[in-house]
Length: 601
Image 1 (cartoon, rainbow, N blue to C red):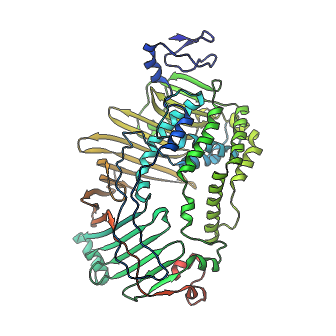
Image 2: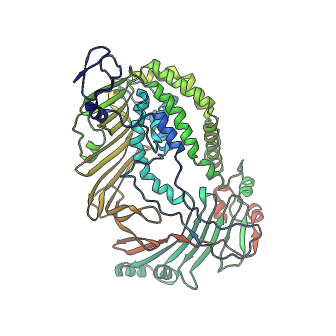
Image 3: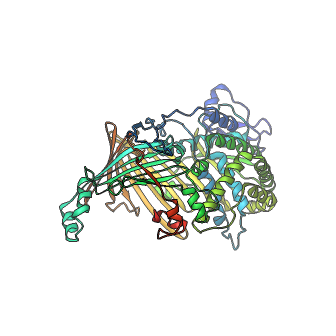
């Protein structure tokens, strides 16, 4: 126990701010520094954390060599390219970062539906722009930082920096999937099948285990795949029924300008179409092309700049007067109901509870920043335009989508209304810590009765428990370690359009540092589509053998093995080219219209 030197009130052990006057407590004597450090929000200055993230150089990966598409193709040797070197995943042991911003943003953007629920008779609705502001709050903590400064900073900076660190760990788990395609992907994938006697008998009786079907099952299939960086180019060499005389053989490619294919058993010609122009003739108002995929990706430089800009605004809104600090117990919203794991200790809980005036000022500051943010506006508007064009091409949505400036105007025009509604709904942002470890992050309404976002993490006797809840959708994991590797369960339950779907993935003998070609760690798995652990589910194993990864699935039907090489040999189709644009446009093909374009090919 101690006393506040500003007002004389007694203060609890480890408190950062006086509960009476809100003043920051002064530095303690050297022997008490360790105690204080254990109770402070983890991390340092949010702004410096973001700057550090922006300055940190990304690990270099060797880009996959790609096939070359030429106007007048000449015979080419099969392309041999090395896949990007495997990067060890230390997500559970080191604090790395580059969280996915869009996931956090989308979770907050969907808050409008839940916010419309009534309270004690009839609760006021939260407008969509207010939830855009909540999305920015999620953005401020969602990206994380690769390093965290040790400087104290303002209360708001410390409040955000602690959450940067925690969410950085979780985002790093997703990085292995990104790394598979980050610099292009190239692999030869072979599928072999060994059916059980019972299944062979059943297929034979139905007339399916004969002729080409038997050969495909007996000899297997192979797909040699190349996917370029940013998904702009792709090549596929497909063989069904491998051997000197495959049942089906097809070589295909696509790039921003052309799509082509060759069926060697039918013709030596390569049939090519300039599909962007054909699609325009069939009704598209703009040039649809694979080059659009590059525009959909959120550039890392823009991520860092966005975090710095809006994180600084949010941090400035958190101050000693509206950030409440207390040491008490915490009632779990995710781990307890989902994993039967209680958080039963006394924790330091930081609660940001802004009033309507403070929220209105925050919304206007965000809107002002959005109005000046030309880089983010350009990316967002381009993303919306691409969505419009694809929607129009499929006949789903002919209207104009919302632009970035529209969001800023809506937020500014309704800032007062949204702020009052959030105050009426008792909006609170909480950070729960145990020493320097973050145990929970919550965005909630109605005194905690309505959860917009909830993240929880705990360890107990070597076991890891973690989970996240966004409205009614939940993702959890329980993990333990034994001599043979990690074992545990990942479970998901998501709700959409009045439907609820569930699944679970149980794993054992997993080594998270040993990644396979397709990104999944080596180990044994059991997929439960309905989430029922009493079911046998789908069992499969992932392991590496030399330069290859094997994915083996066994059930009552037989065994199925997928082999993926780290080095791919996909090659562009060669031969005399024949343009088929006119055939697609003059009605000689049976279908017309964009939605049946692929069918026509």
